[in-house]
Length: 87
Image 1 (spheres, rainbow, N blue to C red):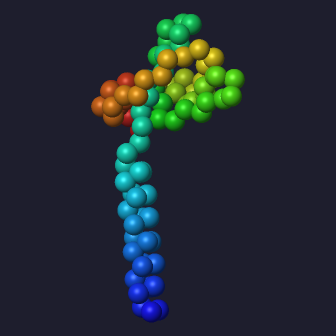
Image 2: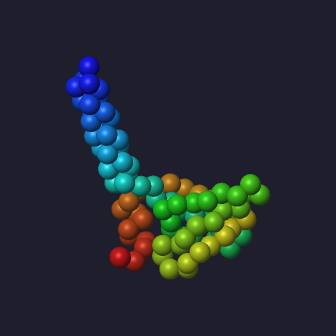
Image 3: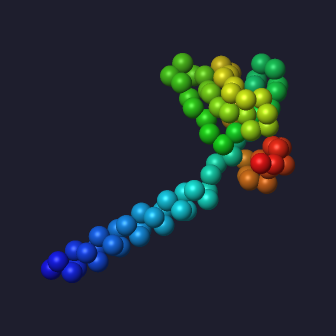
């Protein structure tokens, strides 16, 4: 009985590690357009507040940005890389 528990526990650890590796490689990329000015930003993470504004780090160089009115579009990795500096 103890042996099957250890195999199940080991399987669980391996499954969690595989899921974590898959999630690391599958990030999301966003294009954010400020509807007031038309300026476009690129980011990989967006924080939404209860008031409706969003906060994010612009990967193209503007730093931390907060927008009240915006249009967020999920984009592919190639479009994101074409519009952001290489790191």
